[in-house]
Image 1 (tube, rainbow, N blue to C red):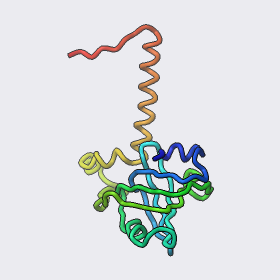
Image 2 (image 1 turned 180 degrees about the vertical axis):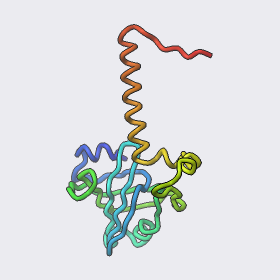
Image 3 (image 1 turned 90 degrees about the vertical axis):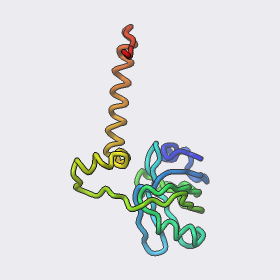
Image 4 (image 1 turned 60 degrees about the vertical axis):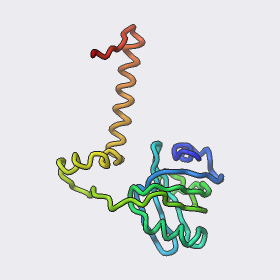
Length: 155
């Protein structure tokens, strides 16, 4: 199993890989399904051809909704049209868990988003904010450690 980040760095171009993640977006055009999958490290497009995978795997790809958990096996290829410049051409596509219809749509109220916070934090915007905060907080902590300070947590 490999992370999406490793694929996007070009470490697995031309190689067969297995990756696991959640569906971020999906669309079907003719005999192909394009599924964008995310894991903790990034997102990548999966190209699923009807004539390459089993009929069950293609039906699963068509049926799967946002946040469905999947396992993908396939070959990594460089493709400038794909988000991130790489895609995985699936040889096998398995849905581990079919998600229900994703409740978050555009222009939701803050109150509603707070009610479904466990889903909202998975968005690219929130993930980006968390990564920036992580970096800033880490730099502040490191600065103070480098200057002889230490952190305490009062009871």
